[in-house]
Structures are given as structure tokens and as C-alpha cells.
Image 1 (tube, rainbow, N blue to C red):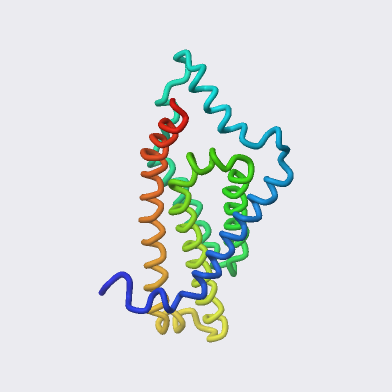
Image 2 (image 1 turned 120 degrees about the vertical axis):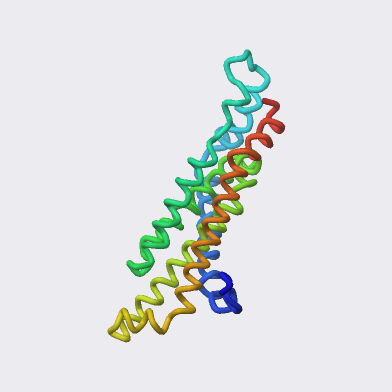
Length: 201
């Protein structure tokens, strides 16, 4: 049996679009809020500071200092996304709140310093936050199954007649894990190289 069954994306199109919309709108909101409320004297200071570090580097700051551990990043991100998925059992309320918080957090960095964000965040964030949106979609699928079970008044009966949905849920989880592994590798190995090259560390 194939992991991605025929019609997977078509069946889950609505919840994927809704999840992506929540993530993107939250990121845009975070960017707009931080851009408006952060003073002009603060905007761009992260980039400026990194360039100053490279120009005034006396040996105390090494390029290796910007290295990060890919495994630790992966464990952290997968923990968050698994929590988002599991919270689907609570009607996805907390799943949505966590996703909104994550979206606002990533967006705020772009609002404060777009250049710094594009260099140090964007290379891996696209994949990482797409995975986060899929985790929210998986939570919505769990909520959908939960509502179905309540209507049927039978958890066992619902599970027996929802084999396609359960396989879709497994597919979501696997895709999220794979995407986060890729994002963690990029963040731990590629992003630092880009940052060093751009900032001259």
C-alpha cells in the first residue's frame, strides 16, 4: 500500500488551504505589527550589528559560533508540531493558537529587519513553516474524525469506517517529519554558510 494514496491532496485540499491561510496571515500580521510598532532607530539594527561584528572581529567572535545543532533543531520543531497534531483531539483550538503564535513570531523578524530575516531565517523557514501548516491540517483531520465519532456515538465504528482518513493522517505525520528533517539540516548546515558569506564572518 502506498503511503500517499490517490486523491490525498484532493481529499484534504480544504483543510490544507485553511491551515496555510492561518499560518500566512499570522506571519503577515506579525510582520505588519512589528514594522509599525518598532521604531525606525531599531529597524535594520540586526543586520548592521552583524556587519559591525565582521568588520571589528578581533578573534573573539568566530564564524563557527553561528553553527547550530541540526538534531536539536529537529527535536524541538518535531515536538512542537506533534503537539499541534495531538491537540487536534481538543477540537484544534490550541493547535490554531500555537500556529498563530508561530506565524506571528516568524513574521515579526521580517518586520524588524527584512535583510537579516531573509539571510538567516528564510532559507529554512519556508520548509519549516509549511510543515507547521501541514501539522495544523493534520490536527483539523483529527478534529474531523472526533466530530464524526461523536455523531456516530462510536469511536470504534468511526475508526473502522475511516481507514482512508487514518492513512491520510499518517501521511501528514510522515510528510511533516521529512520536511522538518530537511529544514533542520538546512538551518544547521546551509543557513550558517549563507550568513557567514553575506556578513563576512
